[in-house]
Length: 107
Image (tube, rainbow, N blue to C red; front, side, top):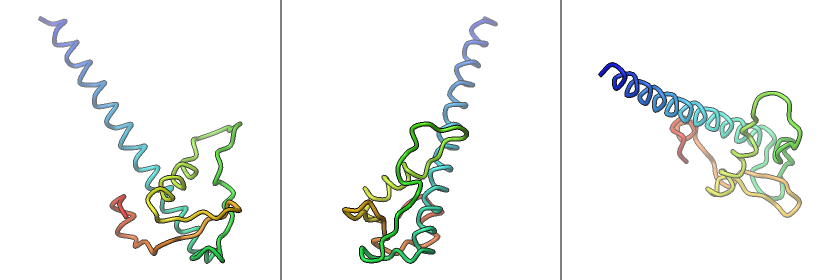
């Protein structure tokens, strides 16, 4: 009986760790959303004619250090229609995004 309880507790711990890891990753991507949108707002990239190049737009092949979620955030923002990309590879905001929408992780 004692072994069964240990196995059940181990499974519960694995599930909790998995859920926490997913939640932390979601918070980091949400933070990357805010960084990208704020960078575009500060640079004044509000339409295709004023689009700007973002240095972190493409993933780095050889990376040392922590994971950078900004390239993934840019792809999500493009797919959701918040950020646009020109033929030259420059980015601009398609629509204004409020801070409340960013805090909730939705647009």
